[in-house]
Structure formats: C-alpha cells, structure tokens
Image (cartoon, rainbow, N blue to C red; front, side, top):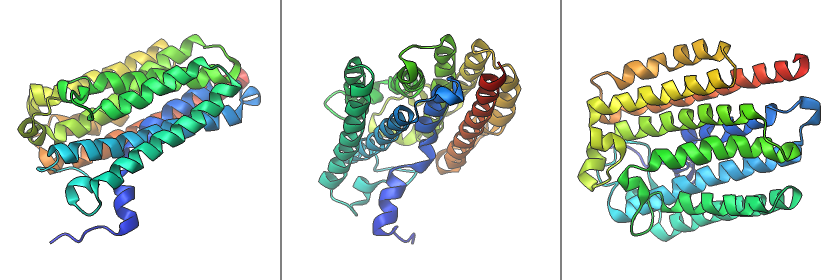
Length: 292
C-alpha cells in the first residue's frame, strides 16, 4: 500500500512542479530580449509572479474541477488532492482562487507601472485558467487545451514580458513566443498521452484522447516541430540542433508501446528539455545583447 503524502507535501505535489517551466521559461526569454543593462527587473519579477501564480492556480483549479466531476477516478498521473479525499474539495477550490488572486494583485501592480490594457489580458488569463476544466462546458474537455496553453504560456507570457520592459515589442518576441508556446504544449501532450484511457472513460475529449495513444504521438511531433519553427524565425539557428537532441528521448518515448503510468517519465523529459532550451536561449540572447 502506497503511503499518503504528508500535509505539506500533498499541496506541493498537487501544484505539479514539473509543469512550472511552462511559466518560467517564456518570462526569462522575454526579459533577455532586452539589453541586460536596460532591463526593468521589477517588471520582470512581477511577470514571473503572475505566470507562476496562474500556473499553480490553474493546476489546483484542474485538480478541483476534475475531482468533483469524477474525471480523476482512474488517475494514473501525479497525486491529486480532491480525488484523494485527503483535502476537502472546497479547500482546493479556495487554493485555486488564492493563486488567481496573487496573480491579480501582481498584475494590477504591473499594469499601474506600464499599461492598464494588461488588466484585460490578465483577466482573460484567469478566466481561461478556471474554465479549462471548470464550469458547465470546460473547453479542455473539447480539445482546446492546447490553444489555451499556446496563447497564454507562449505568446502572452513571452511577448507581454518583452513589452513591459520599454513598452514596445521586438519582432523576435513573437517568434520566441511561438517556440515557448509549443514547449508548453509538449508538456500538455505528455500529460494527455499518459491519460488517454482515463480521459476517454471520463468523457474528457482532449486531442490525444480523440486520436488515441498511437496516433496521438504525432501531436508531440507537431509540438517539437513548432519549437523548431519558432527558434528559426527568431534566427536562433544554433538552438535548432539542441532542440532536436533534447527532445529525442521524449519523441522515442511518445512512439513507444508504453502507456498509462509508464508514460510519467515523458513529462519529466519534456520539462527537462524546456528548461535546457530556456537556459540555452537565455545565454545566447544575453550574449547577443552584449555583442550584437
């Protein structure tokens, strides 16, 4: 019998730390598009707080909504609070809204320093995070999760962070936003490929669930191809080879015969690849800013 995690550890596990690179990498990239000596570090820090708070809040909201719907009854992935019955569902819901509140406060502060139009962007992000699996018609159950992830953890996070530096958007920010968005989508596909059988049983029709385990692996290929397109468009050609090499173990796993719990490692591979590519881009962008 598996021992239940402790009171603190269960909240950490449910926050899903392996998904946090999706929040951090685009903010780092967006920040380092600016010459280091002109970076507004307070604005960048606020962007990071917003991104991390939204990610954690969305993870808790997903935990709560899937749990009360019964979609996690056949869970094979990371620990979930609601379905475990170790924590009352209302407490998980409260934690989600607290996360959204933290994002909201940081976002309001950031908006007061830059542009109030960002309030609308932040509000749309919070609503998208909640209705991913919440509400009467959760769009994540209809195969639109990738679109949410691509927009908010790719384009919005990268371009938004670049914008709040000096209130303009470098062209490369859009291309690197594409790359970051597809990295985040690769994390989502790793999760959805693992959960194909359980999601189908629960009526959660993600793109992977619609295609099935074998054909769904091609979704992962599309994500990696999207990363390559983004870095090529940003003229970071040295990153192309690195991207292929870093994602190769994950691609092999995606096309293997493994399924269910055996695919938990696919999420690890995806997170490591995103962190490594983010670090490489950070170094190259910083170098180019100094010498370009």
